Length: 315
Image (cartoon, rainbow, N blue to C red):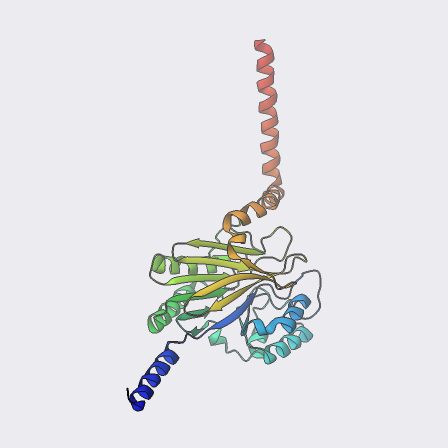
């Protein structure tokens, strides 16, 4: 075989291998990143900042899952956020606390781009602001999602939001609050109608959990081609983020921001989370509806006494 032919074969194999390589990126998702409600430190959560300083080589980008600002009127907090934003590759979605014009001005994000996307290999990634109440905008947002999906023809679609738009009740997943959930749930319903059982894999990733004790701090569920993840910090004990490895396939693992220990998503499956949240959720609803609960309890006691009386009379 001539030397020229060997060179040609080598070039063909080299170029073919070069084009076949998959673009890979790793994202770290952190929900409720300002941390504890009890500690107003005018900054992102100190534990998260320490983790990021020591482990930022583990990922390419940080995605802040809403509520990374405690008070939009706190200039010192906004300044600290701006410094962090300038020094790192950051994307974010808007939460209850971050829903202000000052944030868009600070991060040089045009208000028209509060819903935006990027592409990594065959993965389409949406960042949506669902901290809204205007139902007239739902059709526009869903139309935007449809248009981008048609244009990009991805295999996998990731949708980052603050609200767990797939959770229509605390009995499914208990969240930090239920503010703006009507808007987010309606967007999810429209996505479900069109794309459930479609060829594309959907991954919904949200950050509105973990702020208080006995509210779930990590969550995973799957339904056919719809995959659901959530994580959030702030309760002072559990500090999990979500590490997302993007390539031709997507890998998800929860990561402890104290120890950098990795956990399988199945550790926080729906049934395990629902068992975890059930006692506090029952107590919360009893307290919230104490008059109804008291009435039911009194009725049960009266029925019990009445049945016992009938048994005595029969004897």
